Picture (cartoon, helix red, strand yellow):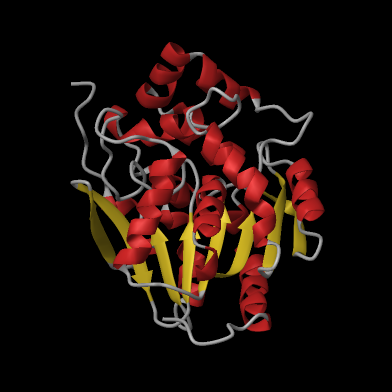
Length: 309
């Protein structure tokens, strides 16, 4: 059947992903997350169509000194992939999922957020709703505000949002969104093994639901379901001004172009910024050797006022 689920081929990524899996019951669905190391909590939030695998190098680099927590959003990675009737695929649900996880892990302070793509909107709304918990922000190729004026949606995203029947067949049936990202999101190109790993969780129609719903949930118009959450984030973002920020940016990004970086710098002129001319949207795939030392230095440069939980 077209809607039957296929098991994920774990062999496609296990050699690169030597982490113990944890699961939280989220309304009857398994919410997968990694919890590696001890110390100050660092929460990494992925985007679409990636999953916690995207942060593998950063987890290995930071977990000897920090507690690295990396969830797979529902519908992504090793989390369950319920139908749209069973789970409300909106940013509000994503934020509530994250809040439940943080509560489950008994974390109440000292959080460093590392965000990418959709992880930005999820992370910033979480931060604004839980300001006292947040100590540092690491921002990579994402937005925390509505699309800057004069910058519309890329054609590929526009087509998925507006040509619903064709988009459903293309994204769910042929996996066009996740497959095209393998070639468009990395400037330097991904190895065959990494391509297989990134796409492994999205191996059948039913398992690709989140890749479609994320695009359909982009708040563009005031009538969009998640517009109110986007408005809250955009208008409250200044409340994060006091938090130390590191911005690492891949210049060759077909979605989050340099216009977005300019907006970040306008909103937070005190942020530490590093641009990478030879990297794209998948910054941690293109330039991990350059980015990871910068993140380590940033964490040391901005120590917590007191010990984390």
